[in-house]
Amino acid sequence: DAMVIQNPRYQVTQFGKPVTLSCSQTLNHNVMYWYQQKSSQAPKLLFHYYDKDFNNEADTPDNFQSRRPNTSFCFLDIRSPGLGDAAMYLCATSGRQGTEQFFGPGTRLTVL
Amino acid sequence: GQSLEQPSEVTAVEGAIVQINCTYQTSGFYGLSWYQQHDGGAPTFLSYNALDGLEETGRFSSFLSRSDSYGYLLLQELQMKDSASYFCAVPSTGGGNKLTFGTGTQLKVEL
Image 1 (cartoon, each protein chain N blue to C red):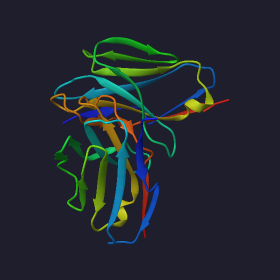
Image 2: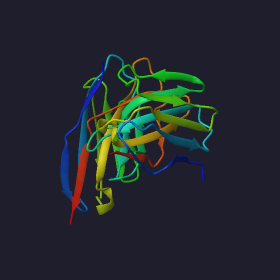
Image 3: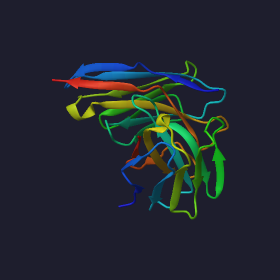
Image 4: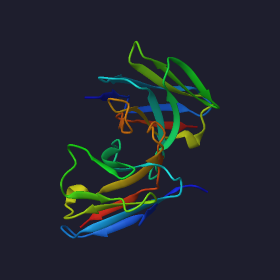
């Protein structure tokens, strides 16, 4: 089945210790997204790739970076996690129009 | 900017019909999407309305009125498994790929 896969599902890190979350897709979609979602809140877009073009949201902290080495994979790097970065991180994909997005199961990040 | 408002919580009984409203303010409008998210799960696409009117998909229907900047999701024959959060969302200004999500409505279905 075509899908969006995220690894790991749960990640525990220490304050200030870099962490990388990964996402892969078998849908062959052009666009990949990273969202942050905190408890009882809506997903908040951090950035997205349209093919290789990187698009950063204006309010995404510099602490967050992303890489998309090929169509199938996308990574989220958090350089120095703070306690406020504890959240669910969702990867999503879509075709050229983003009205229907396909989400992965998410990675729940805990910062100690 | 864009903003979408939804009721924070709705409670209904199994077998009933429930309507979840969404009002939006956008500088440009390209359609309204709805997503379902169970606790601990990922959002799942339900529907998309680009034009005014009602779109029906099984037990779920979605309605849009562009003149009123308003839409709703209608769930019929409610089941316990429909207990989840529901988000409306609009594409970004210019019709790009990004979605702005509404505040979300937590639906609780009771026996």
